[in-house]
Image (tube, rainbow, N blue to C red):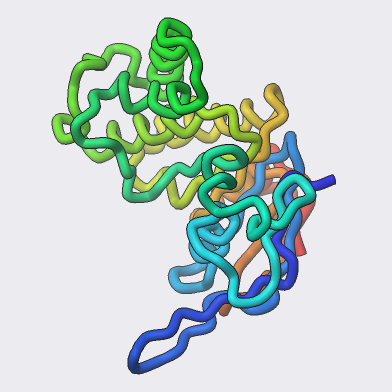
Length: 237
């Protein structure tokens, strides 16, 4: 059974002057232990789909299903706290908390012992390449790339079965991007989590197990030649 799915999901942005259908009858399934990529150009609908999966919005039509239950039944806030962990493109770090406190936050919400949370936070900061950084620094004292890595570490601190990442490599250099992708793939393979990454970079998508492509609000098939694949498998439809 899938841990997260979209069933005939449609969503329309409406302003005073126009309507834009961002998603049109989208259906897809995501399973534990797999690394997924959703590719597409700007305004293709991929970020909107991620938002629906994260419970950051409610479809106009269709359902988001988590662990066999509708997110409408679960409740968006409860879904965000218990089922998914989101790596935001805009970081969304707490400005008054230092590096260590930002990463510890999800574990504290889940009532983890303080000492355990602190140790795990240090491990995650090291895993994303910030092991030598002063953990007392505030987010504003870091570069964009460093803030992005703190945001990734914070998302990984959660015990959520699904990790959703929105263009999370955009502020990283090639070496750090490579390391983060390896870390995300490791979470899927070693911890049995489901990792879903939205990206426009086909070289990153080529490393996924399953690839979906968004175009004009609809899911399409993307064909990645075997010679370009570095660790993926099947294609999404």
